[in-house]
Length: 536
Image (cartoon, rainbow, N blue to C red; front, side, top):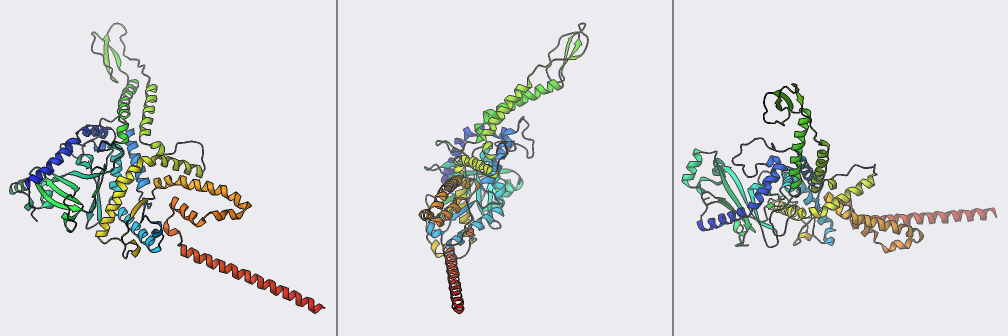
């Protein structure tokens, strides 16, 4: 379908895109350094068009500590936040009484399982890992979440050089531009010849492999008509623009924000985030320079430059294995130059610098240090303490990554009819909230559970003297509270009605046993009395 073009509006969009691009200029050089030293496989951040595919990278890198620590951090985030083998989030209405309803609880659990199934059966796990790598290095990640006819949902982590973002007054990303390089053949296949000029189509057919830049723009739909079901009624509007010819190739919209842009940490006056790699960049550059010097010194010790006799004096060569002529007639022999470098001091400084880089990536919080043998309880306590220290740092990821991710997935599944059938009546008009049961979320709650355990341990001795002390506690409420803190699955807990039936049955059984004992005692008494009377 041919799109009606309005040149003035298209020019406004392109102007806004160029303005967002110019605002990012100061970040570009910073990201170049980070890519070179921290994530060398993405070293072609900005010259991707001119560099050949498959060329060698990291040739100027003498120490790979930062790249290794960044990979460790990404793997830890993946394991602790979005582990595929763990159910890392739950759904709630925000109303505890409604959540206790068996039908509501069963429906929410089925929905959570369905979302986890979708996440584990798509490309989510591979794409989210790429996003975590970008967070640790560039400080800002990007991932598109798109509807897919075949796989229901597809995820696409986008490289830092392709996107530009803008914030609203709440400092939330609500607008983005993504550059999508496409070959001429792909461009015609995706958008159709009717939306391109005849001249350009002819050029595309002559050079089908030439690369062209298409801009995807997503922004809040300020002219939204809620009565309409097409793109004009969507919360966010979407445009695909071919910048070279100033043409709109596709119009659309979204009911939810179709991407996530988490920032590791950020200044309130900045849009893009800052990363552990940026924080440690001075040490990372220094350790590379030091490693180069130490390697050269070691080479000289293993293969020292030599002095050889000659009739004239030439330039002094200090390279490993270098030859330095000296005036003949004095010694007339070949001998090595004595190297007095202190490699040990260099290695000590190197280890100290590497340790500072390691601390910047929070590796100490992610891994237990070697020490004396500990019990399982001590190991768990130290692990939980380390994870709680990471809690404030990763709180932003809950808000900017996980929350919009689940909201977007729920919206897509609802439109595609992939949610469980027959939602209970109690959910009508109720909002659905997300709470996280990942390893970090559990560790943050663990201190509350430990406080309760200490409290109950203190009360237990008092109950031995006076059991009525326990009447002050609602033990059923305590059990439910501890189950929530320790992340016990909801379907492992029995319903209150079922618990009541079990207790009633137990009480009735006890009464029957007491009655039977009383009847037996009465019968024994009568037998004893009858025996005594017969003897008289």
